[in-house]
Image 1 (cartoon, rainbow, N blue to C red):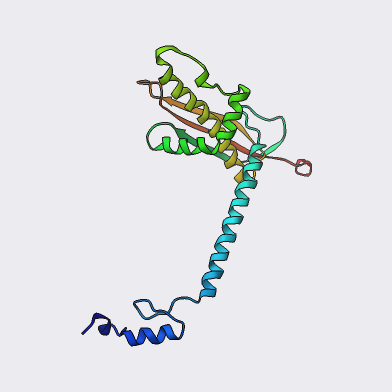
Image 2 (cartoon, rainbow, N blue to C red):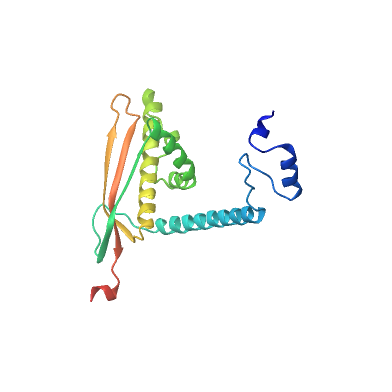
Length: 196
C-alpha cells in the first residue's frame, strides 16, 4: 500500500483535480485562485512603490531641516527627541560601510568643496594609514549621523533640530576606532495663528 493511499491522495484523485484546473496541497486543499495571487502581487508592488515615494519625499524634506547645537529665535513646539548611533568597529562597521555607500555622492562633493578632508591627499608620516582610516571614517560618520538624525526628525514632521549633542568614545589603543552617538530635539515651527 502506498503512503498516498493512506492519506486518500491517490494518483486518480490528483488527475481529476488537475483536469478541473485545481492542484492540491498535501492536505487536499486547492491553491488560491491565480487572480487572487495576481491581485496580491500587484498590491505588494504598489505598496513598495508608495513606500519608496514616501522615503524619497522624507529624504528631500530632511535635506532642508536645520540642525543646531543651540536654540532658535523662532517660536516652536517640541515634538520629541531624535537619536542616532554609529561606529566603525565590529558589527556597526558593516552599517557604516553601507551608509557610506548610500551617501557617497554627498561625501565626495563635500571633499571636493573642502568641507571634509580628503585624507588621500595628505601625508602624516608613518602613522598616516592608521590615523587617516580613523579620521576619514569619523568625518564620514559625523556627516551620516547628522543626515540620519535629520531623516528621523523629518519622519516626525519636524522643521528643525535644536540642542544637538554628541558623545564620542574613541578606542585609545589604535585611535582608529570610535563609537558616535548623536541626539537632539525635533521641533515644529509655530504658525502665526498658533501664537495668538
